[in-house]
Length: 54
Image (tube, rainbow, N blue to C red; front, side, top):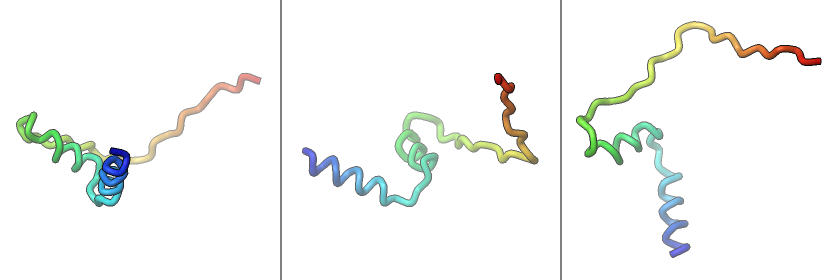
């Protein structure tokens, strides 16, 4: 069983599909096929600032 798990993990890591493509491939039968795409971030995103607690 350990060898089978190693083989499955090895094959999974070697794939060149993105996580989104993999999720779509795995779960596409359970939804109507609508694609979920993250919109691009437009412009500069200001980093979070923390209060100086000194």
